[in-house]
Length: 331
Image (tube, helix red, strand yellow):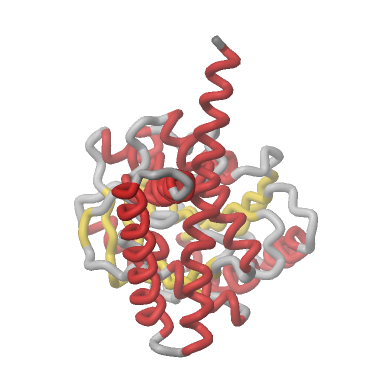
């Protein structure tokens, strides 16, 4: 019998999350005889492979591939090349999925004019600070107007998390860009839309994504995201949305604003003071809203918002500087 759905899961050092992810996939209400699960491991150094092998020994529709390049785009392309399904669904090892996830994705692809469909990401944390970080990442102030994070209405969008694809999408528009270590989803979805394809977000499809569980972890993620957003924009102009560059502009304004404090430019000082005041008001408003007036959450959010924005912006600035430095060295 031919496979209808190929599920591809890139993994690397996911011993804390992969079991819950795989159990949620195996508990889907979609017929198991119609799916294959392709695990692409980036040469994990923890217990991930041991856990994966246990599942492979039990289920003959689970495959394991080695990803010696260790990046997600390589993992996805390798999985696509070894897949046989009519539909290809990318899942993330840091996530788990309700029993109707695959069925709803397939039903939507069967009935709607779209090349890619996806759902809403319910962000969760496993520790106390992780739960606060999850609230920040679910706020428009924390992550901008990313519709799949802020529980938007169903409709056509610029991107969806992970995504369920018609197989012919990759023949028509190409696979993942292996020059990118991050932001590969945004770039692929941009390429699809640029060439006439459609991406649809359904608020009836949901999954849970586990965010970083420490301040160091979320700042590192913010820095890396900011860095790769700039690199992706350099490699593929127009692939990133305006919201991705707001932290860059914010940090630049802080640098300029702090420097003019030692000058006599009164108007600029007033403008800078107004910017800080406006940011503080927005921070207080969204921190209160997301914390639901829980004092501990409120104060942590007041700290986390600027830490995340600044680390993201610094990543972007350093990436811009490195790109200019590289171009100058070529000259």
